[in-house]
Length: 130
Image (cartoon, rainbow, N blue to C red; front, side, top):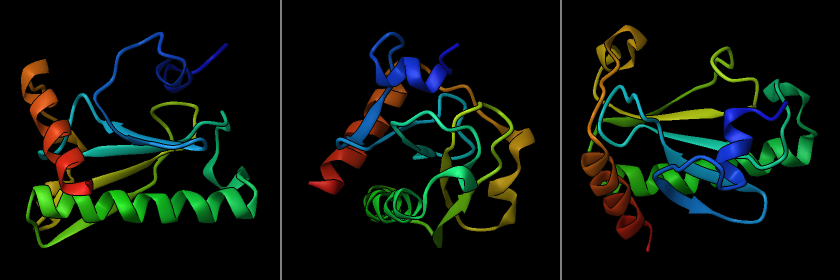
């Protein structure tokens, strides 16, 4: 069965997309820790990030680096933190989280913004990437 991320890639489930190419997709987390919390995924459905072949893993991180640059421009912060946990969805993914301290990385503090707010955040990041 396809993961929820594969369904997003295929357009079956809507997402607030930030950037995309032939191998990767970046879109907002719908329950972010902070404004700008973005997920970066390979389009190839592989559960465990370290099961990606070396080239795809390297490219994933380079794509994430580009997205992190846009996030930091759109939402100034001390750093864009990178978290790979991999338990939430069986599809390799990287969390990019604008953060100023460790409290910004507490997954128990997730927010539930409205769709209009998420759309605005995605647009701000896309503009910063342009």
